[in-house]
Length: 284
Ligand SMILES: [Zn+2]
Image (cartoon, rainbow, N blue to C red; front, side, top):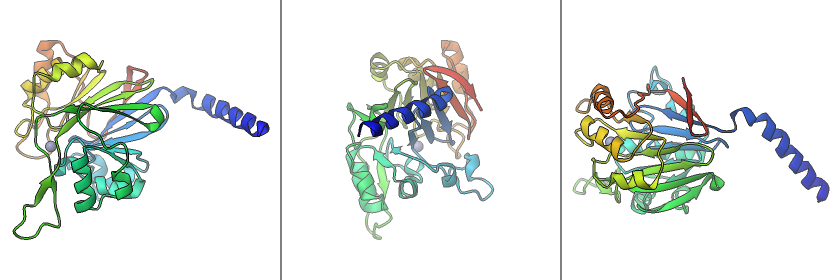
């Protein structure tokens, strides 16, 4: 036993030193619309609102299968049940074994109506607004924050005289706190609300991923107010340019942030930004 533990300890040391260069790096990738992946320093992969088949995703163009670009996923986080957010969650879950992080009503209906794998949709990472959970062996803490929006699940089993949308619980946002990495806020599709200030008071946000497209969520001017309310060190726009009816670019948002002297970075679909600790070091 002793020999074995010594060997195990040595291998941890060796593996540790090999990984040292990238050990403290967190990677945030945007697939277009509200879909992001986060890869933690220890290599856990979180996928948020994974509509990978959205028209902006370069991985979905030219007949490519966008699911091939996410071979490993540990957790799927859903802010609410709308199709442009649940996206390809069911197929990704089946392919990767990822556990679901969302509210219980959305999880229950995705399992029952959309074929989300039951074991992965009924773990203790199902949560409610106001709560925090620890995932990825304690490396990541997730807080579910309020969002003013709606939430429903498309029901492919609905009969001719039944509503095609089932209950999706309360819509939400997420604060994702990564050990030795940044704290990231994803707004979901929320409208601006003044109590967003409480998110900024409770959490020290390195980056806020904010919906800016308007029509269904915040107009660019209100999204800038949201960036100010949550006191983000950096504001990154999302949920724009995907389909007609929402803002086609982030120029209005950028202009408002400039007036407020808030840092802005516009990711390109498919782009990854890298944090070392809490420091943004590069994008590609
Ligand atoms: Zn949406």
